[in-house]
Image 1: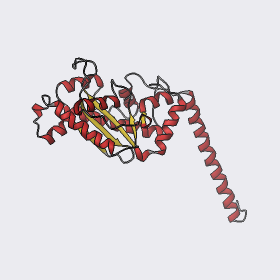
Image 2: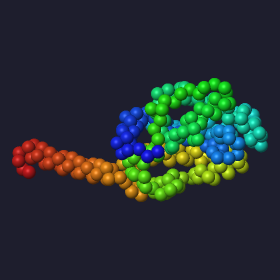
Image 3: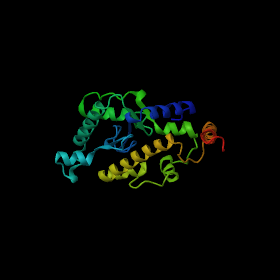
Image 4: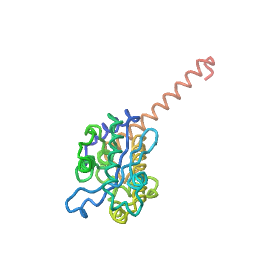
Length: 256
């Protein structure tokens, strides 16, 4: 997950150049480790936020169930049918956003990631999922490691980073607790948690771009870069002030 400072800066510059094509994504699923007897975990919701305009799109089990006329008490029994439609809707969205950049939090392998979603789609539909180019996937968590160092915040990273940057978000549910929420069939609550995480990830990226993210510590390169930025800003301000004085002096015949 950890990447070099240079690679992290490169990823940040890519986001900065293509903000209008950046999508922030997260999803919730069944337990990654049990309940499935070796099968891949079912997906209960996927949330995608347009980074540039704050519009959020949800693909959620309880929403699909309502659309299909499935009663709340029957969702668990018919979950495979619901998940199939959920993933079909999501990948239709993917088709319509070819070439966009997908900003995510550690969605990096078959255990939890884009490959998991594609696998579930294949299992439920018998078709191959539309491709999300690996080069267009940008790991926010990896960027933070690269920019600020491995100990940039205490474990667990997500809630502790929230605490440093405005507090733990409303509706946020820690990963371990989400498993119990899924088992209890509280799909709307689970979806609200995913929405809160996506909004937080988007805020983190914005703070990184503005160099305002609060962390427990920073890497030496980041400290140096911030110092240079501060010196540059002061130099520009000083130059502007000198120019103004000279300009006024010329205009008013040397009175200054």
